[in-house]
Image (tube, rainbow over all chains, first blue to last red; front, side):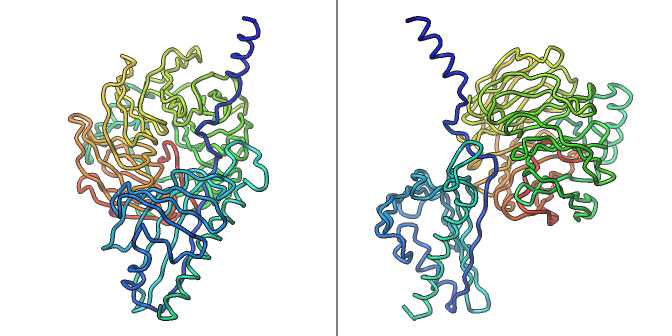
Length: 176
Length: 323
């Protein structure tokens, strides 16, 4: 009995601890869209951390703390999964906000340690919206399965950004 | 920084005299001319000329290089390539790779000993530090430490190696003669970068998850202070009695007086600032900004960013990257 227990503990000790480790290489994605509308109008649509109604993949948003640092929101996606996010900084003068994902199932979005910045810049009366993300892949150890590797993470994040930015352009340029 | 910090020309001369004449081998070079920046996403090493802040070469590396150490004479760069599972030895002047040495499962933090010719490589997955003889291309010893060792630093006298064991929330203190852990110090949550001061008295860790830095009295083997910094601190440089801390998510550098432990300034830099190092005179601090692909220069007398150089994709420069 004791022997089994000691062996069990020793075996556990030999297992690498992946509790909070992540893959070795952080990935980045930047997506942009040019919109034929003034920057302040675009910011009025996307600058509120508690409103993601402009993104077609988001079915519902429940949040706390408004637009102050450490405000939170839970996004329920049209596909059914949820993503918990925390606001790091919302600077309406610079027209940008920074946030991170505090909790997500890799099946919903295959990433770890994700942080992001959403911003609008004036470009001669038009606007350029930029969405940037930094993250590690969904699988935390070496040799990830294909659905949780670096490419899968990049593809998923790019897809979310692209869908949001393209819908935003359509909405604003339609005069909505 | 394991380098002397004095200011101005007199300081440089004094540092040169002190290092060369009084305690040879104890300090790095008195003047640095290049930054060697590992570009992890771009799989390369950028060489930046410091006097005009221009990239003068980009060397293809492979294996997603992250960590860097430079030999005491400045001629060799040792890069950790976690995805290649090797250490890449670069002849810096020739801009050429000399060899690749297989080390562990995910080599990350790396440091060069000031005199015994060895380099130390932390392994993110196997929780060991490999002692490598880069001339022979061999791992000569392995030292078990805490979980996911990250940053490494050697005391200026070469007697001790310190390892920031990220997932143990602790620092291991290792005797470099015996290659054995002789102590551990509890620090903040998830320490990543670690830097030792020029006298070898104190070490500073950047604690990613608790958004603070821990100050360690090395001889006493004890934490003697904690200072709050910005979100997700990564690494620390020391110059002129101040600690400069890169805050990845905040895109800032916190400047802390190491005597009073007060925050002197918070400087805006590029997105995701990571590797940071001070020149030997303490006049300038260099910061690799991972998202923006630039190396920025901070003038320490004005506490302002006064130069930047474009580098490759995803610069990390995790380690002492000036020569």
